[in-house]
Image (tube, rainbow, N blue to C red):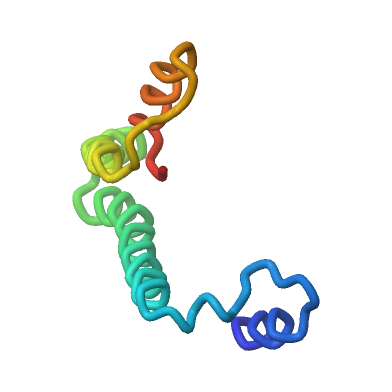
Length: 105
């Protein structure tokens, strides 16, 4: 599927993502790192509740509640990484508060 995507994107008149971008080493390395971190994060999100229910014997609700600190830590760690909020004075507070709770900025 990935090879089909690359083939289609390389032949498209207006590709979704230009493959020329990946000639820049910064973009290539950051894309690989984001992919690996995303795989690890989703692996934990999927595997951990199954482990807690199957091995530790907790309920589905309790295993979901045990993931809450992980999600809160992810959201709070993403907040300092975003660019400073910019915009009109009236929307700046709303924009900044929304971005601070966004898991991905």
